[in-house]
Image 1 (cartoon, rainbow, N blue to C red):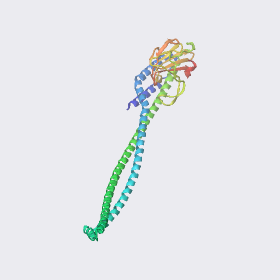
Image 2: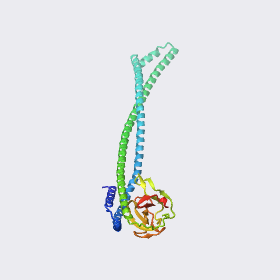
Image 3: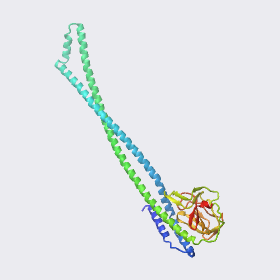
Image 4: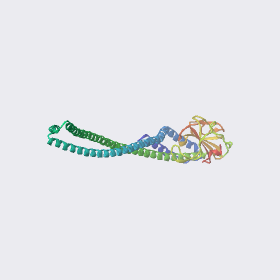
Amino acid sequence: MSAHKRSIAIMMGLVFIFSCILPVYADEIDEAREKLQQINQQIDAQQANVNAARSKQRSVVSQISALDQDIKSIEEKIKSLNDDIQQLEKEISQTQKDISQKEKELDKQVEILGERLVYVYEEGGQASYLEVLLASTDIKDFLTRYDMLKYVIEGDMELIDSINDKRRELDQKKSDLEVKQNRLVTAREGQQSQKALLDEQQKEKQTVLSEVNQEKAAYEQALSELEAASREVEALIRRSQSGDQLGTGIFTWPTPGYSSITSPYGMRYHPILKTRRMHTGMDIGAPMSAKIVAADSGTVIFSGWMGAYGQAIIVDHGQGLSTLYGHLSSLGVSNGQSVTKGQSIGKVGSTGWSTGPHLHFEVRINGQHTDPRKYV
């Protein structure tokens, strides 16, 4: 079983444990907290594996991008090879036509030369040339006959040279044809090789996409069930909330010196699951280990690990009003502890389902999340 499948199996097992928590009443809240801590310890022990699996999921994006680049490059090579093949086929066709034309011209000249050789042979070869000269009546006639014979002989030599040139041209054309045909074979083989590689890369891309989609679906289901289980536990803890007003009713900013809201309350595109989901609080950008303070006075009703929230704290301010502080790197208060407005309760971190250091801050009224900006 692969690492990411083991991580998912472990997570699903933990979700199952979460879902098995039986309802308890307010007088049993301590027992509920104890069970929650046990579960949280198990989740904490496996968090490294879960984080590694999530990192792999995010890295798939760059892997697919690299595969897309490879596929694009291969497609361009195939197109270039197609162009080369078409050009070579045209050149081969033209070369074959040139060879055919040269062969016709050569045959014609060979035929003419053959007729001349037959004539010379029948006339006695060199003897006939000598007889023509000796038959001259005077020097002028001799020179005239000599020039005529010279012209005939030069014509024969030019014909022979022309035949030899055409033979060489024909041999070169045939050699060029052979080279181009070999290049065509190589180009076609390269084309087939690139097509096979393209098919392989496309299959790999589909495999990667299939795996990441399956993993993503498993994480979505696990997250939904974890969040549902977390809400159930929160509901149990809320039953222990005081009906009296414990705070001032006027909140202070929970991260002194850091006021940048990196993700507001409301529907958003989830940075890990890559889907639109409800963001039940607001994210405040702050460096690792920055101080977190209680937004108002109250009683800590939860301090520990809370699934997707990572290390979290819930402070009851009375009359159904509570605040939640998620993804902490360290916890500075414990269950049942009274805190005052502005008191340090923990430090900024990136635990749970988080992509970087920040504070996830929620305001809840009777357990229902609401926009924190109405209070701070």
